Amino acid sequence: MKLPRRNRDEYFTMIKISHSIPIAFLSAVLALTSCTQEKIVEEPVADPGPDYSRQLPPGASALRLITDPSRLPDLAGAYRNRDVFLLESIDQSIKWFNAPSSRQFFPFEGITHAQAKASVHRFGELLQSAASEQEFVAEIRNTFDIYESVGYNNEGVVLFTGYYAPIFRASRYRTSEFTHPLYKRPDDLVTDPVTGEPQGRRTSSGSIVPYATRRQIEESGMFEGRELVWVEDALSAFIIHVNGSAKLQMEDGTDMHIGYAGKTDHPFTGLGRTMLDEGILTPNELSLNAIRRVYSQQPDMVQEMMYRNNNYVFFTEYDGDAWPAGSLGVRVTTESSLATDKRIYPRGGVVLADTRAVTYTEQQRPFLRFMLDQDTGGAINAPGRADIFMGIGPGAEILAGGQYAEGRLYYLILKSEHVDEPAGAVAQR
Image (cartoon, rainbow, N blue to C red; front, side, top):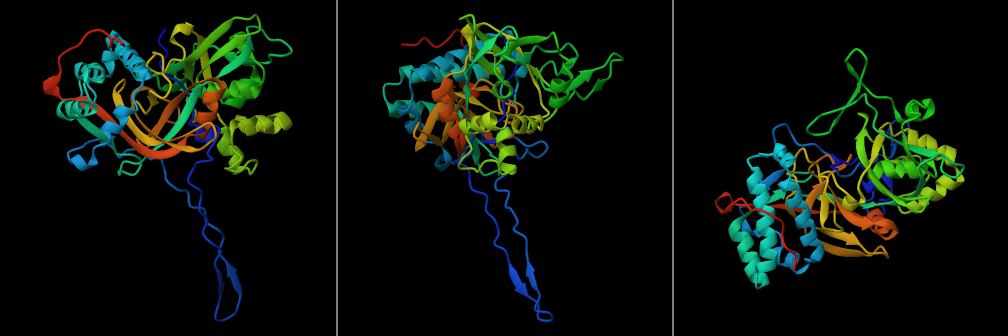
């Protein structure tokens, strides 16, 4: 079953920003007037820092062809960092390109469906056939055009955050232990048939109006009878909304996999950002564990903060063989799948991410990897934003929560003269 897209805010706003660029404050200025000697104190002014969500100007492209060889990424380094998971991710993209539904998203800024598909196939072949690092790099430079993201500032700077696939306990029925529902998609929710973007609620007269807010939905019980599953608490439900999918360990011992089925048309507001704004946590304290700790101590206060996020997500059950699935409907792969804004970046293709990541001890490490662009997210909505899939479960949660670093993003597109419609997937050796 194809899942059209996930709704998940970046981990910065939801969970952790301990590696963020610190917000700088101007020093208070104390001045004496020559006439009255009155002390005038200027209020501290917050520097908002980089606007990674800055939108493209009308008609602009998020990609810029590299013509200066000095601006090319470190292809050799990324080749040395390859692993078997990259081939698995390539096969997932080819699986998507083989589906007729993928054709609706092309041509994309002059890139044809055949060219995009051939780019992935040819790249996979080179990974396995190149006799040396030097041969691989030479072939890439000869047969591929390499584009760089313009980034948030038109100078190529992209913020890389992380996400993961959570595992929660749940029940198909409400019990004293499982008290908070996740709902099925309502019939009156209207989304764009191609992009999946939410448009609102269709009324009985046929007009489309804004959907109810999170508070209105939960306090009114308007979806009673449309519960898909019940989880332990409101925070667990909120986290699943943020990630857009989850593996659920049911109380009867079975597993259930749920994924995104739609969202309302309201903007997303991150819980972590709200806690920072309210002074509940500091940037150095902010993590999912810290949020859970605050929730256990003051659940009503945190519930009110969650209500500030007017956006609401609906879910469906799907086959676990494809879990965790990204917005392309194919399985995402640890540190080989990337989420970007699919309005401005082409789907399914080979990318190179050059940034830094964290270890389990929160130390910085270089992250230079070829990846596949296979996902998107509710707040991944600008050229300066990208989200790395860090894996499944608690360990991946640690890595995703600590991922917040600037870097550069590149796309590899096979030159048109080398396009030869391929068939099948990359056979993994």
